Length: 289
Ligand SMILES: NC(=O)c1ccc[n+]([C@@H]2O[C@H](COP(=O)([O-])OP(=O)(O)OC[C@H]3O[C@@H](n4cnc5c(N)ncnc54)[C@H](OP(=O)(O)O)[C@@H]3O)[C@@H](O)[C@H]2O)c1
Image (tube, rainbow, N blue to C red; front, side, top):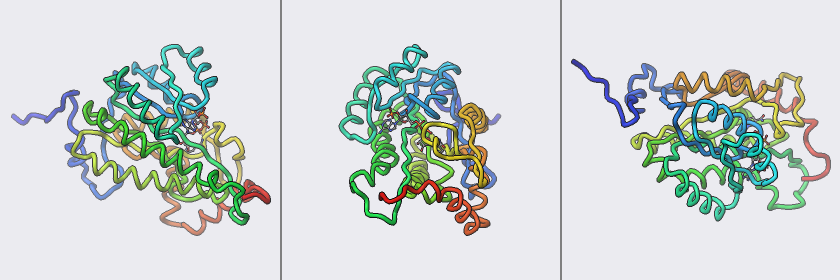
């Protein structure tokens, strides 16, 4: 009789699922993320997409910790959702990452999911010199430095607990929205980094998932207007589609228009690039870099 190989969580190991993929050359392979009984840390979980995921994970029976920079916003989350743990921490500051890792490992030794979600998006005028060169790379420090730093600081506990990393990139990793040029570059970087991370962690039992949202109605996308081919998804719809994908074991989750952008990038790259330039041109700040 043939026995199915199982790991300590009673699941077929990640590698077996990959090996059973009949199309191993495709990007999306099978994962097996368990969706309850986990201890989950979500950076930037005090608002928008991070908060929506935090609430869904909590509803499913997970212990959830969220971070953010603004204590007042974290306090509001705590008051409304007492079960969610809140910790103030800035992912752009390596010293704060070190302190956060020490605290979480001590208080939540069962931590087994890290969702790297914190991010900002800025519109930039590349034709004018920037008034503040440091400010020019703020998105790099948060959206890229934060993900890399957090992953590194937590990799030991995630490996020990055979955990999961969920990196939130964007559909704009495929095709840039030229009004937000640095933001899109950070998301392309995270897309690449996440693929390397998945390969390097393949033998460790740590699963690496990438969530690539399309435009979503949050503060980050407040200036994006619907039209010119852009539609804005609600956080509820994003959570619904993303959890359906997680249940199917999809490792690179492309909800809504993210699928179309991935397709267009391959089959009509010039057309889609120009469409996004047309749609975002009016968002380029006038005069300032
Ligand atoms: N909305 C979209 O259309 C969209 C589309 C694709 C991808 N995404 C990605 O989804 C993620 C979440 O975006 P969102 O739309 O939910 O944005 P949001 O509504 O502006 O929320 C961002 C969250 O991140 C936190 N944050 C920002 N900088 C931080 C830092 N340095 N350290 C710790 N926390 C920080 C914010 O709290 P504080 O300000 O208090 O720190 C807030 O909780 C981002 O990575 C974004 O790039 C969004």
